[in-house]
Amino acid sequence: MKKTLATFIAALLTVSGPAFAQDSGTAPVTAPRPVPRATERAPKQSRVVQEVKEGQLSVTRTLDAQHWQPGASITMQIVATAPADMSLLLPELGTTFGRFDVRPALSKQSAAGQTSLVAELVAWEAGTLDVPAVTVSMTSADGTKTAVTVPATSITLTTLLGGNLPLTELASDIHGPVEIDTRAWWWWLIAAGATAIAGAFVWWLMRRPTHQPVVIPVAPDEWARREFDILESQRLPERGDVEGFFVRLSDVVRTYVERRYQIAAPDQTTQEFLGQAAHHPNLAGEHERTLGAFLRSADMVKFAAARPGADTCANALTSMRGFVERTTPPPSEVES
Image 1 (cartoon, rainbow, N blue to C red):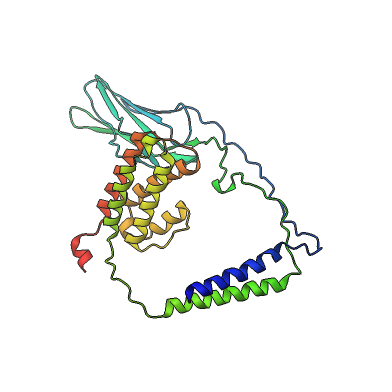
Image 2: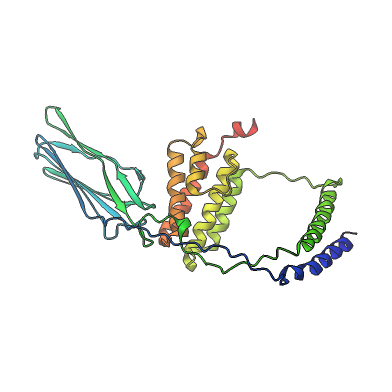
C-alpha cells in the first residue's frame, strides 16, 4: 500500500510540475538586487611601549607583532629594573591572558638588577582588544615592598577581509530576476492537495503502533570521547584539511555542551551560543573562557581563512578533551 500511494503522489507532482514553468503572459516580478555597502579599514596598529616608574623600580612593557591580525603571534615583553640588591617578582601568566591565549613559548631571564619576561600572545578575533594590566613587585633586604602596575592598554587587530566587516556581509552570488506565474493558481491547489494527502499518510504511519527497539542512551561525555577518537584517527591536519578538522571539532564540542547542559541552540552564532551557555552556573569562570577561546579560534579558521599548523590543531583537540573531562558530572550526580 505504501509503494502504491508513493507512486500516485510522484505521478501527481510530475504532472503539476511543468505547469509552474508555463508562460502566463504577465510581466515577471523582479527581486531587488542587494546594494554592496562600503566598509572602512581600521587604522594600522603599531608597536606599543609602556613605561612606569616608582622610586627605584622601573617597569617597561612592549607589545609588538609582525602582523597585527587574528591568529598571529604578538610578543609581550616585560622588563623590570631595580638596584642589584633588590628582589623582583614578575606576574605569573596562565594559559589565557584577558582575551588572548598564551602560547607555551614563555621565557624568563634574570640578571643583576634586571628581570624580564617574554610571552607570545594570540587573539582569535578582530577589532579593538584590551591587554590587561600587569603588576611587578620589588622587595628590599629589610622586607620593604614596592609594587608598580603597568595599566591596561588596547590594540587593534585587522583581517585580510578589511575593517570590522561582519562575516554575514561577505560577497555572495547575486541571482537574476525571478519569474512568478501569478495565474496558474489551480496547479498550486493540485500540488497542495497532493502534499496534504502525503502528509496525512505520513501522520497515519507515525501514529500506528509499532514495536520500537530499546535504545540505551549514551552519556554526552562518553559520546564526545568517541567522536574525538574518530576525528584524531582521520588525521585531517596532516592531509591538509585544517578547516574540515576545526569544523568537525567545533560541532562535537557544541553538541556536547548542548547535551550536557540541555542548551538547545543548533542554529545560533558563536556569540549567541556563548551568551546562552554563560547563564549556566556550571559553565562560569574558567570553563566559559576555555570554551569561548576555542569556538572563536574555530570561527577564524572556518570564516576568516586562518590556517594554524598541525601542532595548534593537536593542542586544540587536547584542550577540548580536557574540557570534557573537567565538565563531566561525578558518578553520584549521574546516578541521581
